[in-house]
Length: 176
Image (tube, rainbow, N blue to C red; front, side):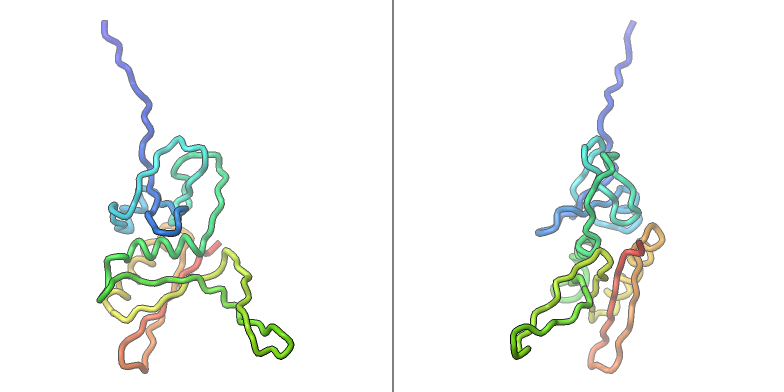
């Protein structure tokens, strides 16, 4: 009599986005497929990890870990948009999103002639960037719509006129 043996292997349920500087952004398999993230920019993550890895798009725990994870929303949004649009766009391609704290520079010193930026940083800081290619702007708008339908990421596009070239301004944030 032959007994059937089942090995409980860890099933891949998500990915970590590969990035030069940011190593903490994860996306579940379903969101990666739905938003057309290319797998050559993703690293597989398996279930059974001790720490929780949370999907940036839908906020699902892809590793079923301990539930504790530190999130850096503005930087994770930067990573998501840089990874998604790394090979798109004219010339060098991609988008260049950056966190915008909206803080003004404060005057320092007796004369007030020197200024330094206020380093206050919150998880609500939006991510902003501009593109000058209409096809890329339409692709970014479509991506924002896809991720907005799956979770708390929201975005806004503004077409700026009056310049020699078209400029498309984007602002992305978490709706927590």
